[in-house]
Structures are given as C-alpha cells and as structure tokens.
Length: 408
Image (tube, rainbow, N blue to C red; front, side, top):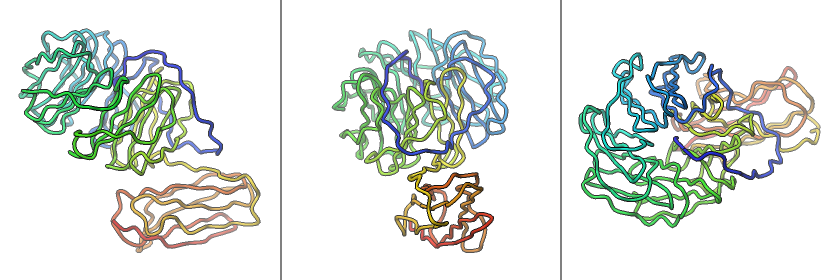
C-alpha cells in the first residue's frame, strides 16, 4: 500500500504467548523506504519506494534486482496487468509504464495532477489513478491516454477498481467516493469514520474492507458493495494499519507501524498478531498471492515473505507435559482454518505434517527444534478440496496420527 504519513506513535498489545515467526526476511539490497509491492504469481513481483527505487524478483525473492526508473521521486504504487505490462505512480505527478517487464520504464505523462498516490486497473485497458486535491484520471487504452475528472474534494490516497465501471476512491476524513458508471458520476458514501483511509480491498463485488491510519484504529466492512460500512473488532494497533490484503471475504491481512502484521479469519471478529521479527520497522505494504504465499514491505528496505500464510506456532503453555500428546483439531469438520494443539515433554526436533487420503504430504506445519511446552498451530486449507486429511506429530521417540475433515 502507499501511505504517505510519516512518524505516527503507536501502542502495541502485550503478547503473552511465544511465537515462531513465519514471515521470513529477504535481502533487498537497499535501505530505501519501500511503499508498495505487486506479484503476478508466487515468484515474480515488483516493489517500489523512495528515490525512484524499483526492485524485481523472478525467483520468489531469493534475489531482488534493481530496475531503472529514470526518476528520484518517491514511488507510491505499482501494478501489473500481465507479466510484461506494468504501471507505477508517485510524487510530483510521476507516472511510469513498462511493456517489457520493467527492462524499460517510460513516462505516461498524466496531465494536471499534483501527486499521484495510487493506481488500479480493472482489466488490461481500463485503469484509474487518484491524487492530491481530489484528482482522478482514467485510461481506456492501457495508459496511452488519460482523462481527468474534476472531483473537487479533499486529497485522495487510495483507489480500487472492482470492474471497469465500479470504482472506489478514498481519502482523509473517512472519505469514500464511488462510481458505478466508469467515473461519469461519483457519489459520496457514508462510512462512519473520520480518519484517514489508508487502504481499501474487496474480496468480491459485495464484500470489502477499509482501514484507517491516525490517532485511533478503525477497520470497517461492507457486505453490500459499499452501501453500508460497519465497524469490525479492532485489530489491536492504536494507530491503525497502512495496508490490507483480502484472501477471501473472511480472511484479511493488515500491516502497520512498528512491525505490525495482523490476520483475521472470521471477517474481523478476531485479529491475531503474526510475528514480523521486527517491532521497529514501519511496514507499509502487503500483497497476498494466495492464502499461503505473501510479501510485506516497509522502511529501510524491509521485505518479508511467508509461504504458509504467516500462521506460525504459538507456545500456549511453558508447563512441562508428562509426555507427547496430539489433540483432535478444532473445529472438526472445518472450513478452511482449524487449530491443532500438541505437547512436547522435552527439547527436541518436532515435525507436524498433513497428508491426504493417498498418503501424499500436503504441507509441513512444524519442522523445528522446540522447547518443552504446549503449542498451537493453525492449518489453513483454503487451497485444498473437501475431504479427509490426516495430521501426524513425530519426533525421534514418538509418532501419532489423527484424522480431520475439510468441508467446503
């Protein structure tokens, strides 16, 4: 996401469990502040940031390579509509386009905009940008030409195209504008918030969320395409979140100041804190490729990656158990997330693996050295088909298997 606020003080909830981080840092090769990231698949993506920085990976972040932007402006937002065609916008009316995967970036020359804060394409041809002074511009030919709409409202920072005609534009003071006719008319929505809207996401045409950044936290949800917005349970970060990513209508991720990564699996009723490994870095953007693979970017060249949805392991008790134990997952049957608890009587290597009915390994949830205690791990089966699965806890001295049922 593309948040331009600078230093915002925040307070963190105390975490009373010990967690194993499943957001792993990557080597970016830069100390620039990184604002936005976009991936076209699990391995190929781009990141943009200050001083015209553009990074590209084609191997899932094992290596990040700088691309030449031709500018020193801060780049706020990046999006690709194909493996070769992409767009970047930024400060002082910066707008760039590539047709060869970023080997070359050329200016689109969007006229009469002061600062372009966000860009979003509905398809390969139709895209929208928003910026300072309430400016919105639209292209219908892949960025070759842009037509500006004079909205004449306060600064807009976020834009989201649901389709070529339905678009949301958001700004300060809880402002959301919506068009259903491709920008011919924009209607102000009642959001119930007075904060700066830093991100808006939609899982589908009906279900969406927005988050704010400011003195108080605020996440709101719509189930009717933005006609009504209702507050959901606070994610627990007093200064709010910078960016959201929706995996489904019920599973949403958020990132924010001081290394905050949050996730809800029940439409915002509860939010869990996922360890980022760094409570000092201002995290600005998140992109979830699917329910398992995701990337987070932030200040100082910070890049984090997860390959298991950032779920991690929580040590819920340090009491030394009498022996190994594997409890029945809960809920069971489940859809798509379930919890698995297990006990470890002594320090050692522990492995927790999920198998399908054919005995094929589906995923490894735990494979590391753990101290004695009781642990809980979440299993997200969003990418799997309904059916019977088995999960096995094993160590050099112990092995047990239990059955679980996924019903979609």
